[in-house]
Length: 156
Length: 396
Image (tube, rainbow over all chains, first blue to last red):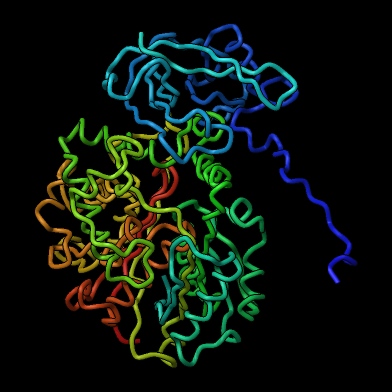
């Protein structure tokens, strides 16, 4: 009986669309904050500041959340910061990060900005709140047709 | 508000790693809910509110509120919506149903929360992707910042700033999991000691596995009615006396006001207390179901719900003030730590627990003695949003 049935063929694995890639597409055709990524390519971590009210945001924006002015300028953040908090991801990694666990992830204060970041080059037990850390930029190989980068920090 | 609104009944599925689909869970909870309320059937439902967070990812389904209507044979002719507010989606559904009835738009509503989170083992990372995009995916999720490391840093900062101890965190987990040992619907039904918590897998230090709620399949439902309608079907209800919500303009780490305090919880609680006429919550609340997604959460909540001074949350559990026979019995259901946390269903289940405590319909081992007032609390995401609802026992 079953020999006569039509078979529907599905692939064993389905290539996941890049919507499940945590890293954003970074060029001008994809995002309004491409200048942030262009500066990061050059090794500079930056963010936006409102030309009108002076509000500094992070993450960078295209509209100031304080006064809704859309004339924002990019300002560089310090390369050196301080570890505000940290923990580890030992299990429960999302797609694309399964092979990277365990790793340290934390919150870093750089200038007036507090941001989350991976902490490279250190074990959890070696770190303490207040430790000095320094910017590093990593290249992201993955499902995109342009070179991508992202920021991390490491002990200074 | 112009009209009183009561919870007149509800029902629950078994929670856990279930051999059941999203649609199975909806049907189980719907049946249990209607079975609980004699005199109310699917044809009475005028409004349907469904709390569900990521059916698109976990069950590959969207437009789920009409699916609930179809599966349960209800045809809402006044309001229908799904609410998504991450971990507080269930309470959001409940809050909208309350508002709709209180405002006179309808008299009878079904609130149903449901989440199917467990995928086959080889697909666990797909489910985790749906948990790692709750904060800003581009700038936080990308750093692996899903819930365990995030709340671990809240714990680390709270310990650093206030001297909260590893043992105090474990006392929260041991308390709540031991309640869940007597809850037939709970995912984790084993007694757990403080040492068991501290010795469990160090998932995201300083938090261990038993400091964390679960990845859970489950659903729960409630029927809400206006006072006038409730009078026709029941002798007892849980009256919603207050409901508050507050959010900072924040979802990503940089824009949170604190990593060790949740002032939005205070704002939301004060709204609810004010509506309910509660001046002294510790003296006036008998039972509370608060959002213990992680052990540290409950400690911060003791403080920011206004029960103790900032920094004294650890002492509150250590002194037994949140035990069943304490000042406020906290999480007698077993909490998220013991029951698990099927995101959209949690707030619904918490409210049902308050109603069950009011009517004495819980096992003796975790029954609160004669409660007259209760509270539910949920946070969502990076704890940027807090939702609080108060209830009182009474006759329609």
